[in-house]
Image (cartoon, rainbow, N blue to C red; front, top):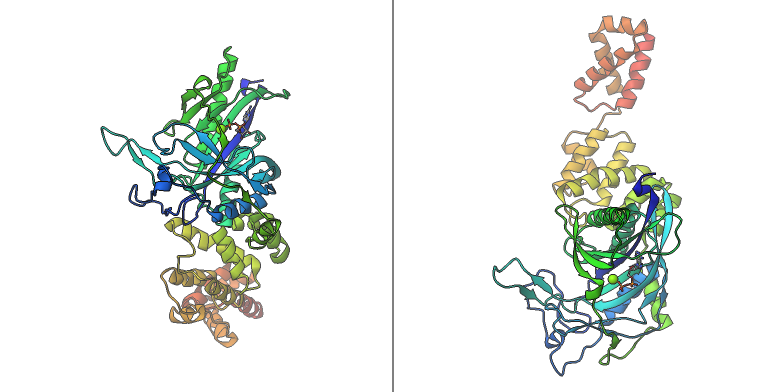
Length: 482
Ligand code: ADP
Ligand code: MG
């Protein structure tokens, strides 16, 4: 048994999601990403003497949405707490967060890896404010601080140490990103830092039931890097233990260049946050009717849509999953099937041409010129054999360019409409057959492949407008008469 096989990994993830509210959690400063540094910073954000924070109720509505989506219990009486620490990007010297009574407790997130569905249990989801941002690159001599982000609302989603593989961690984060985007509470962008993940990692011998000392790895800027960080940390811990060492509780920082990590602080230097109840904020009371009305206002979530796509539109599980991976594609599909009954063709168009175009050009589907009703028109023309599949792609190319005409108008203009006129097809077919008497003889003797030659000739004569299915039928009939 190799060393890797003797151990199992134990992972718990802490995910911070920046909520997309217009203003901050305790102040009316704006929260526009990328604004001129330090332009969204009021005395409240700075924590100047005499100011009082005021809770932004949009925050708990978004937090509750996530809680409902994750099957959590929602806390009726919420308290805020002060978490004290000293750091340059924290102007007040403390962060307002939730400690003993987080807004959501329990619950789970469902993931699917290699066809197996698992539930990852959540410990809690709590609300808190973000800190500012240090910049060590802009100036050679000084570290610069931008406090625009200070006070921007966050939810922190804390999992139980339930995750047992880096693939599961990847799936878990992908699911969280999908959920926050469906709920429209966070843009889910890890590269820009609106979704951040700290990974708590420990190892134990397979069969062991107690948890061992964990290491927390920070500063991964993509889901793929979280996976890499976990894999490398597990490897480091196994090597350490196998060489007679012990794992120390510490916080490490991930280095994306080579996937390694370096220690940030050890247990001895761990912060003592001296949590205490925030005296400047009254408790936030959540009424049952508020929870009900938030629930009623929530959009369909990916799992519900998967079920709907399978049941109502007879799609395969695979297609349903791919279509719901991203909200805008799922919504596009939902609108498309309002205009066509060919649900499978609709799915193929969205997962194929539409998705590759959007991905290739890195644009959002909503801001593109592609409209569901036009795709439905292409599908209808194809189903009626009025255009070929290549013709359909040519029409799609027009919609990409912003053409606003109907598919049939474009097909007409581009001369893509196929002839399904029997007389016309028969005369082309006769002409083609007359051109190659020797090939007709061969065909009669059993060389059925020659039909392709006649077909190609009909296509040439018709300038590509002959309906291939009908033409084949007519050619077969004519040839059997000869
Ligand atoms: P803290 O607030 O100090 O970070 P928590 O007890 O809240 O500590 O745990 C944070 C995260 O660490 C949670 O996601 C939890 O599941 C995870 N965790 C706790 N113990 C372990 C362990 N032994 N191995 C891996 N992860 C762990
Ligand atoms: Mg932690």
